[in-house]
Length: 417
Image (cartoon, rainbow, N blue to C red; front, side):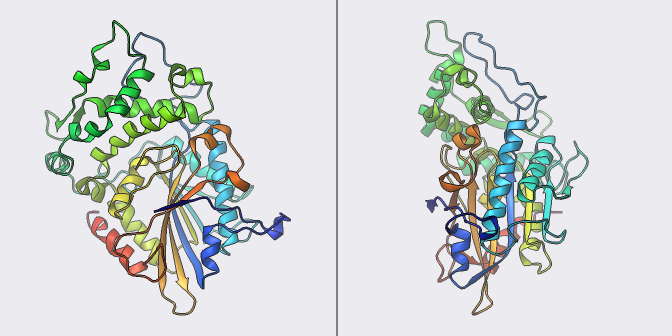
């Protein structure tokens, strides 16, 4: 994998000075024509979810309050999403997929969001950034319902059995304690941020209590995770969200969480996906309907030039797992999807042969860029990580034949009912 920062595409129509192309535009100069793009976005900065915070400060200091209701995209998060939408427009205009300005036709652009306020509002902000002032429809099912595209297990759109899931996850991971064992430093960082290290610490501050378990619920219909992954993952994410929101550092882990510590907290958030999204049994089911839809978007010649799906972190991890991919973006731990970032899949056609090749990548603002709401131009544009697929036979570095990508998605798509 190669982490590289694209240079911004200077657009003549916008009277910008110079001419520097992003990676997407650079590929176009190599005898390739970009045809279609699918972006699976994670929603932007949001308020804490109900029940997300599972630990209290060791000596009773209150968690900072938020002015918005739980689970919602914040105004700050909306601005961050608009910036990403503008970046997408400039990048794809540089590649010739869209004009630099104006409202795209309805058949050229498709947005679909999960049913939460944070995903619907994020999609709206991305669309406004991509096509300011244009009436871009944001498709979604009724708020509060289970969309099988994003929640196939909950919607009953894939066959899933809790006992089979527990057995498969235990076999793949050797259990929660095996996952946390290499990350004692991250757990120690969480303890320090939460105020541990004094004479009357609560029991959970001690490494002796860092033990977890994955089991069946009494009714055998659900999985039950206990221990440090369960208690620290959401707690860590609430602290990361506060930093990305631009709150005072006193409101970010009571002033005890600097950027290096935040990356360690990100590791604890990522561990949750090693249970619920990355193991094959979970990934193939969580990404089942998504894989089926993406196959159609990649193969169908009448598919929109750009399809933007806005969901959550587990959707991204499951799809990445189906494709056999790992990622690490600046400021985040390995395989922790950045707030407001996207896993992207591009279909390119070789002009000389007509063969179609696929480029997979991750793009995201850093935590500091989100915190400061930096304009996405010049040296401050999002980081882009190329994600080459193992075992792809192609002369073009970073590309994979379309058929190979489809075959990887098809196994998961067959889990959809």
